[in-house]
Length: 101
Image (cartoon, rainbow, N blue to C red; front, side):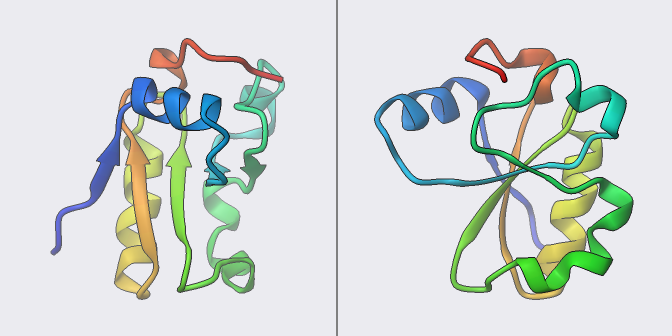
């Protein structure tokens, strides 16, 4: 199994502050995202990822986010196996210090 690329919350925050266009996907449950999401992130619950494969483009890289980075890591392995470019935000929202909406 190929290793999953990661991004730290600090690096992600910097990239967003510099205006980089990133594909962010939050895989937490509805009640979790109600407490705040990174602006611009798309919410697709982990269990709904297989049914939403048509949302993803194999030419783009997606950054996956959850509470602690465990679920997003599982999603990354799944999508990487399907041929998608993925990156996991380590530490998840527990480590996120940037803006939320």
